[in-house]
Length: 106
Image 1 (cartoon, rainbow, N blue to C red):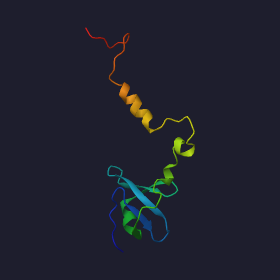
Image 2: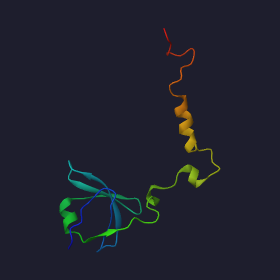
Image 3: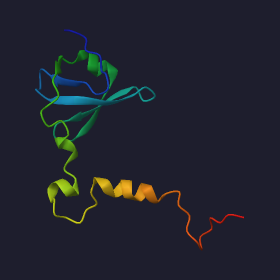
Image 4: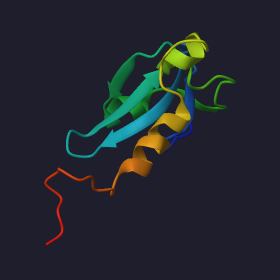
């Protein structure tokens, strides 16, 4: 059995169960490897369990973000949900001062 290193962002297949998952975090304090499966569920694997599993490196699926779901705009392009340029418009307002606010120059 080849030892596979759990690197964040790496995809693996459990050869025995056929489950495909991505390593999303390594919690050194809790000593767990956090993974996310294709259906979106998140799980933890202890290092001892990681070593005993039959794992193979896997390619990221074609739609690797499917588990995260669609944004409101992706679900309905005609919706009133703010588009990607909305935040940049808000950012352009930051730093401006308006008369009558607590930002006054003395």
